Length: 168
Image 1: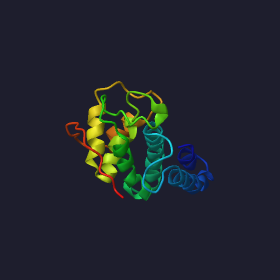
Image 2: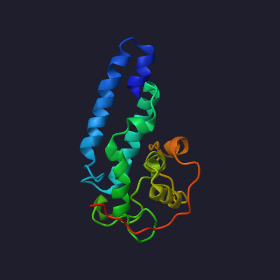
Image 3: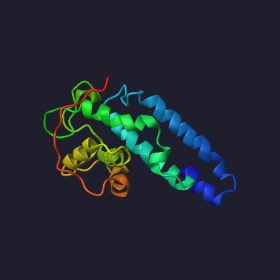
Image 4: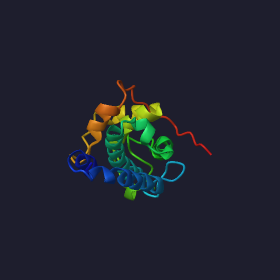
């Protein structure tokens, strides 16, 4: 974000854009496994992703490209991980108690779900976001609501629980 702002007002600011984008790309590709999962829980994975997607959106705008064009391929597999780790227990957004410290309640950070639904076409993410919308908002430091409004689907389906489909 700072690099994109600097590029407009400082002659050397643009020199930082590509290295920053490359660092973001490398971080995302190293944090998420090839199958879209992480070694942390869904809460951490979705929280990190919403921050990364905000940075990718800024880069895409600066570079005159689409968000779909700049995110790495692994982002398209993250919905499989999220869906696999969801619990069948209420509330919607609770996860299997093997991650995120085994805490109860909603662990999914909704800020990436609308964007994931839009760029991947994965209706599970739109359905999950729809089910999370009536619940209390994410912390104020999250860019999630804004990302979902700007990049998310125009309409959300009725929330529904689905058993995960494993892709082996």
